Amino acid sequence: MTIEIIGTGRSIPPRRVSNQELADRIDTSDEWIRSHTGIGNRHIAEEGVAASDLGADAAREALLCAIDRGLVTEKTPEELALTVDLIVLSSATQDFFSHPATSCIVQHLLGAKNAAAMDITVACSGFIYGLETAAAMLKADFRRKRALVIGTEVLSRITNWDDRSNCILFGDGAGAVLIEKNDTSNQNAGQTGLLRTILGSDGSGWEYLILRRGGSRNPWKKGEVVEEVPAIAMNGQAVYNFAVGVITETLARIMKEENIALEDLALVIPHQANARIIQAAAKRLKIPEEKFYLNMEEYANTSSASIPIALDELNRSGKLKKGDLIITVGFGGGLTYGGNLIRW
Image (cartoon, rainbow, N blue to C red; front, side, top):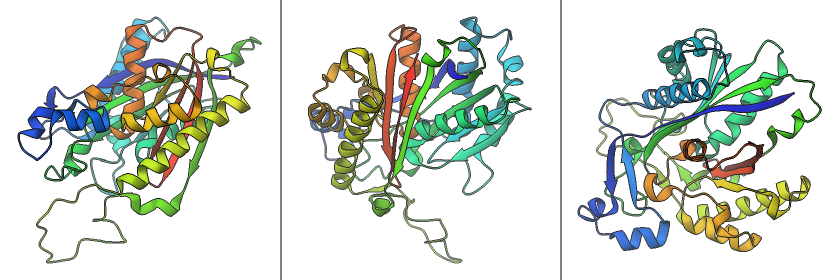
């Protein structure tokens, strides 16, 4: 039994904000942002566009991808959506606080009437967790065959645009994959698809990346006057140290336990947070930086959307070939981390 990615998609808001545009508003510069983060631009959703809108668009593109490549018999996204058994969606910027789940709204927008839907909240590790969750649920029931895994974020709504320490980092966007369970008895089938996942967490760092207001720990109070929109707060140095450590450990563990030589690995697709994190991890592992696919220069940090956006870019550009061995790796608030080993 294998779990194959048969379609990829992404949704990027058309409004593009350059470093220079930010530098015209706050005390920073294009050179400083690029040299410290590797980011050059970010895309910002228009007023009224929510995480579910971007997520549904990305999912629809993933369905179309599978159709266009002749990997399904269905002829339209609407027809294919009816065969989806499960939607797993990750977002730190859900449409609504607490409920309803954003995945349910996406299910409605797609017309995926036969799909169960669930949200997961592990921030930037969301796609890695979501892919493993969806794969496990497909394997657990012979009736389930297909699932959509979506990462979608409108981080511009929880960013303090006057705080130059982190407003330079974030952007909006969504990415999605359509996965399918293959029950073939072919002995070689086990060599393709999702091969291994590592998941982990370190709750001692829960304060390092946080949105402090609005939950049961720090709720809104009746009559309270709110002068500032709640925004992401981050201990940048602590997150950096954690990220470099867990990326290094996760990649090393997967490669050692799965007996993967460097020359066997086509690409590492990391969460797109900061180029310096990737450079530090690459140096520790003695992996050439060109083995890491980076697109943060264009999109900045889109949290749980960053890895599926990158997968779609690689898939559609032809840079991913059938049989390529890749590792996705990421980290996020919680703190959480993980990696997927995939044979394309």
